[in-house]
Image (tube, rainbow, N blue to C red; front, top):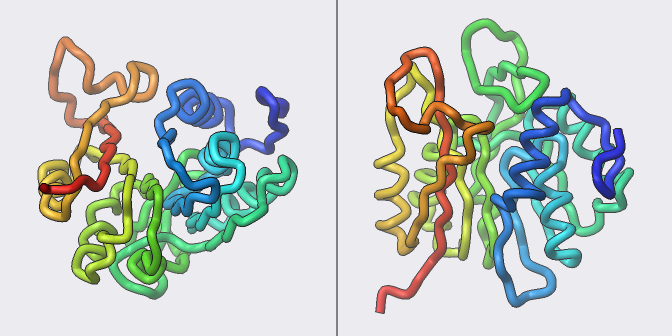
Length: 232
């Protein structure tokens, strides 16, 4: 399809609309940088909308992209090639986790998938993010379907978070999962980051909007923006 200045092969209409709105209209991954070639790590690249946004804002940026779903990884590469945005982009067909190896994976064919041991016979490559944090990283984006805290903990244990200047992490509040937002924020604070929390608009996340009520079957999401600051 033709979408603004881009020609894209998409997963489906709702996923495309949400991603385009959040990336290009709301600007959820926009960041300021004085370098003409910032290094960006994109965890959970999906069909490539976030990378197209990075290339629009920072044409000379270098990107390391992670996408574990084989079908989405092919879609991602095709969209970047079609829109001449593959320069200085390294595509890793792998997910991010606490260790290197293979993990069972349940794909949803749209906005993402999850590491799950049940109801799937598909396995994907998983790598530790700390192995890629070996030089200054201007911006880290993590939208990895609930594995964000696990990945940040691994980076912290490897003393690799010190290389990251700014990040946006999408926190997933799964209804039957543990509540880990407090742990995530505490980790960021402990490692020298100041943060802001944003719960999206009502289209992307209506669950967190008033009047408040707990619904056990409906997940919620928020974005955590963090920037390293001097403690002086």
